Image (cartoon, rainbow, N blue to C red; front, side, top):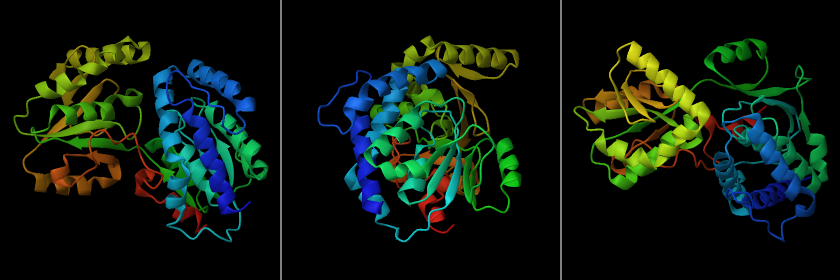
Length: 352
């Protein structure tokens, strides 16, 4: 199986996923292996949601839409064209996945296989249904993948490199356990937004997507705002109001109620609109239903702070004129070449 065969297989997977990119799936007659997988995948989506209440129909559809748009022949070929992926001696690469959002480990899975290596996947118990059926679909399209994909729930078998994602605590365990092996070990990171007070309503509405998508559970979700002195939050609260129905989700509501009670009992100053709170705090990691904020005096000092804290930050969003971040509304739409923690996974895989 050569590189072009692998690219073609993943592009067909992207076309298959496009059918499920809306809450109401739309079957297309021309999709490869649809007769075998369309109904099975619909049932799998139901199981994934039953297993993890955070995986709502809307958020699963959003994730599948992003992947269907990424896995086009054009994007895949553009992505791999930056590398020399030839004569790769296949090695066993273990991936320990997180489970905070649907298919959060898929990019690592894709990267290992597209470079010609073999993958051993250890999934999070929060996300066990989606990836296996996508692997089965790949095998149905390109049978040579069968010997390149292995899932395990036990201790990892023999492997030669590892990509592990977890918390700061588990990262210390990973670093000890995998010492001596080539590895990418990811820790906690959070995303930030820089505001000037001159943002348009449209920009702030796009920012609300960065904040609320996946209930704020992803490392690409904005959990911290940097605002100028005397910033008026009214416009921000107006822009996020379209997300008001999020409070009807029981797990989100439980977190909102709990965190609000903690803030009130601790007599913290908060701004609250009934489903979302803003609190001044120097931390980057805010709890569900809350975004922290911090004042800055001038943009140059803020640039220095963000550079100093770059190991804590996944994404920065900011007005385009500041040239210190990506556009509002783009954090949850990464391209294939946008790597977690700014660590080039493909380059790592080509050097093990």
